[in-house]
Amino acid sequence: HLIETGICKPKTLGIRGGSNGGLLMGNMYTMRPDLWGAIHCAVPLLDMKRYHKLLAGASWMAEYGNPDTDDWDFMQKYSSYHQIDPSEKNYPPILVTTSTRDDRVHPAHARKFVKKLWDMDPDLPVYYYENIEGGHGGAADAKQSAFMTSLAYDFMFATLTKNAESM
Image (tube, rainbow, N blue to C red; front, side):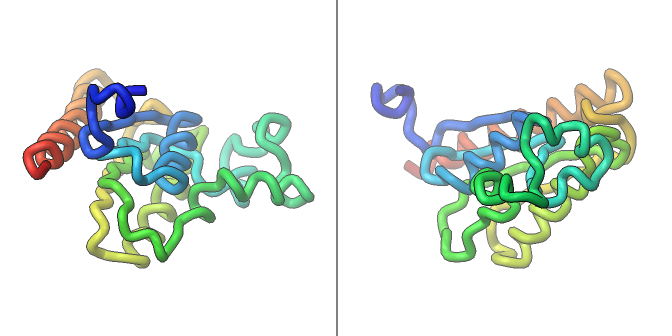
């Protein structure tokens, strides 16, 4: 609606989400890269083939399914890690953030996703930050939380402003 009504253009539209919203951000990145000028993907669940083997992942199998069964036929469609397309040349800038001490969504999801993108094309605008403290919220205290929020908004502002100026 925002694009159709002319309020913005894809290059000036940013999205942000964490945890299950990080799964959504990963899917927006891989499924509809044409719609976004910037994406912040925080403490994301991205590898649906192995999520149940990491930390609390096994407790989510009733919600997401069991990738070791026929469920994988459907699950792979929203496993962002597995949906990265090497032929896609227009992925938008993305900031992926995680926490080393996240006890819910293992930081391996973010690490593997970013590594795969960097290996595919080192020139892609892919940025990564891992806080060594904190938990699933990405920060251990108010100061770290303010830093993480500032990092995300600075990325969004700088990226979307640059995109708008180049139009």
